[in-house]
Amino acid sequence: MPARALARVNLAALKRNVARLRDELRGATELCAVVKGNGYGHGAVACAEAALAGGATRLAVATAGEAVELRDAGVSAPVLVMGALTGEELSAALDASSEVVAWTPEFVAALAAAAHRDQVVNVHVKLDTGMGRLGTRDPAEALEVAERIAAGHGPLRLAGVMTHLATAGEDPEFVAAQLDRFTPVVEQLRPRFPGIQAHAANSAATLTEPRSHFDFVRCGIAVYGCDPMNEDPLARRLEPVLELTSYVAAVKAAAPGDSVGYGRTFIAREPTWIATVPIGYADGIRRGLSNNCDVLVGGRTYPLVGTVSMDNVTVDLGPQPSVSVGETVTIIGTQSEARQTTEELARRIATINYEIVTGVSARVPRVYHRDGEPA
Image 1: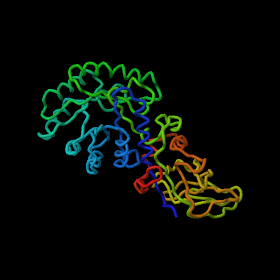
Image 2: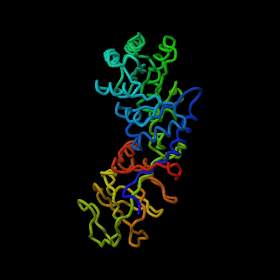
Image 3: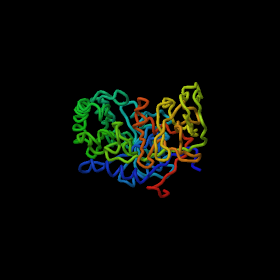
Image 4: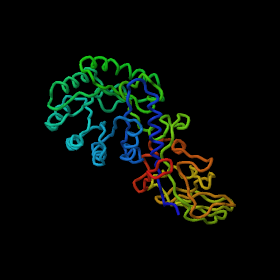
């Protein structure tokens, strides 16, 4: 009998996605694989190793703890921690030999004080060109921070200058405006600091805006075979890496007037059969999918009916079911010719595929394979 809930992760597909994204790049531009959020829900360490095998040259995360996890697993590639860091987190990031991001002179001073004398700390200056979150909006301050890093503050080394695009894949005019703000800063820094690496592109920009590629691109969601435009990964020549399944635990008849689940949000209007599938919102099946989702069983599509509960969902099999207890139920993935993507689920509840994959909880085991062969 299949596992109660299972996320199968195809590392061969991930490796091919990295190679496909690298095909978009020109010249010596490199690819940085973003593995924050537990590898977008897929498992950070396994996905980091597969991405590096596929041609990524570096990795990026959001937190110091994520960098520590990679180092503890033996990952030796450069790791950039892109998020803000408290003093304690900064120490952990430095202990993990991480590259870090700075945008104020005060943080540069704190970084110099926290760094070990015998290490080189690569620092990337962040210019906020329109995302409105981290980074300085002032190009002059970005240049000042760069100067301070390069001026001999102990072991600090100016490694890069970066920005983050807010509307790649949605609003090309705003992307162009951001690049128009970023490029002059890059051009001022390059002659003064040879070897500095500029980076701006996320997955969407990698696929749609070559001008944003600079020295390396930071690809996240597309590495995992999800469409950064939240449409159809196959149209982008991306292979979904994650398959989420459960199984049919029970099948019972429902007469007209019988209800299913909390709140009686589904009441049978005619005789039908109901399958109970032991996966719920504690596993990552969003409650907003109640009466608003399909699942795949036996290569056919069936509607999820009733309220998604913590540990179970229910499925309407119709009046003459050909489904048996123990059969595999696919929530994300394919069965025969039937397919359901993270993008389709996201559109059902007015969100994005990022939230679907990162929402698969730790209660769901991840099993890694390479095109069906054990990884």
